[in-house]
Length: 396
Image (tube, rainbow, N blue to C red; front, top):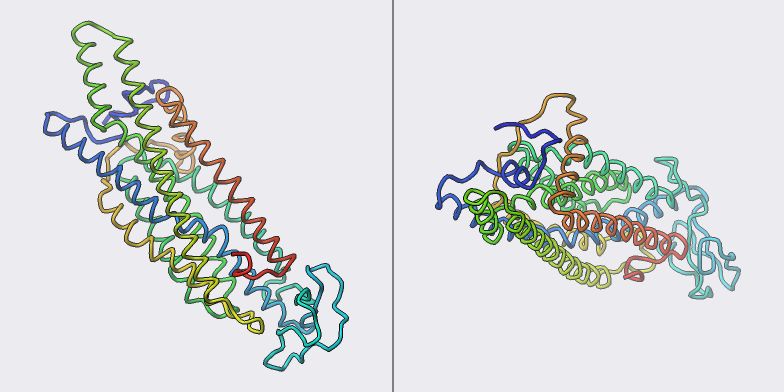
């Protein structure tokens, strides 16, 4: 297969060179069309499988980690104090006295204290890591975003080459699903750092997998859909008999853009629907299994809510991967492996801008909306937990 140079990108390059070898018969064309339809369904199935994990990444995992680290900080010599409403509120000086540290009800609100009194560690530093428990998720989020950015730039576009497309998708999927599935078993609060490490790696793999599904297969699926194949065949037939035809080429491009918008919007709808369904299930679990006031280390509800997303992900994502084809692509280029992704990303953006500008706008818009809404939601959740000591069931 001959390599495409950046200066020669076109709609034909996008469709013919990023998929399998061109079909040689009507049977091959029909097989490609059927494969494209199956892969479109697979993309939607993957959206359903991974949708519930978004609320896990943005809400429940950070809450689990902060809840456990807060309890770990309370083990310091200074123990805890009771403040009104929030972390910087006035100390509660009401009738009664805090329960002894050694008692079974040490974390229960002392008799005579109002409902506005909440407990906070006096020394907020977690001794095992030497960091304020309220700042751990900020650092973890920054590391996670940096890892995601590096992964997408360096490794993200590599699926365009040969059979790496499906291999990397499988690799990422078999990182984030087991990662999420094992978190419910981390019941010991001293394992918070292990959860944090698993969360960061799983989050990066989850984002990479979804990017691979959309960016790695979308162009191939669109190029082999029956409507696009018919428009392309009509254009090539007209070109062979009457020379270049701007009308048929324009019609081909319009059909391709229309299909790209349809597929992207459909995938987004499946993802959002699964996200809402998953959030409802997770909220019910968190509220139903809310810990007693005097047992802040009981995170069973949070952990089961996180595990429920893996239960949904396993059947849908594995079913999706079953129908995803390897899809041989370009020959792997020479040069620095670390720069291959960056060079390919520039080329892909150029192709999309010239051939499918609407698809490029949708992909960029979806990415920006995800980053913005995700950051705002994560910040809001951490603020409520840190400042007002709100537990997961109260936030839910």
